[in-house]
Length: 283
Image (cartoon, rainbow, N blue to C red; front, side, top):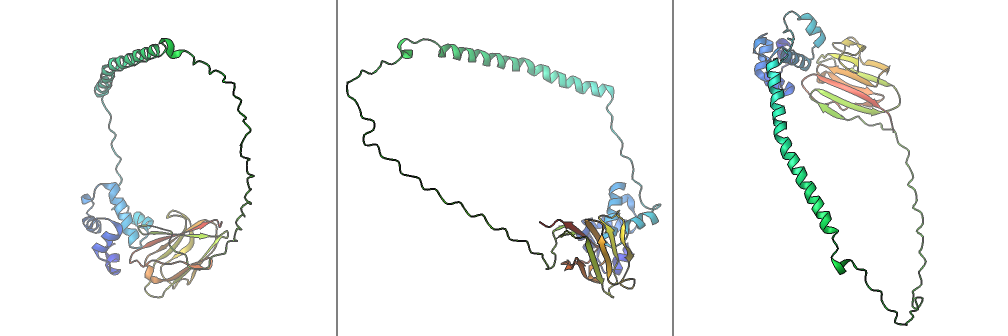
């Protein structure tokens, strides 16, 4: 990995900025000094991230250097003794027993206050609950129909016109990046057709190109081509998948990538890029 980094003209600071791995851990990986790494799990994770940033095949690296790489150690499980378990249960029970009398006292006080409130409310205070005297009839008749304004007719509003739906037009421009996560770039293309991809590589600088189905563990949809001498362009027609994973060792060695007749907007980066092309249903 050190030879690959120096051949690519990358410094330790650039690798640290791209992979977010501290420089001292990168140096420890290059020198095989795994005891200075924070545990075997993180050591293997750092090695995987570092290898991908250099455009190396992680599966092949793990298989070739299996004897040298740190092994994943099982994490010890912590079990409490019977005495500790009984102590914790006793402590919890003691706390509950201290709070029960207080809760019961508050509940009894609340019930007493509620009973007193309803007793006081229902007491008879003499004339306060007496019904009001009826008003005497003065003998005057009021014409309720006099000077009553007539109701004006309400004009109905015309129904609103429904908006006319415009037929969607097929996009033909370049496809921009939908989301980015470190060295992973995701593009989305709205189409009902299967994905047909063309990868045009340059003669120089040479770069690694690999195409898989969906993920690192997916099946190869095209052989791995280290440079344009094997095949140019690399073509995958009517892929039986909704997501393609295109792994580029050096993005400067790629001229363009075309998916279903539309070119991807490639990001300029000195390290490996994992390009995911996702097919979404057109609305």
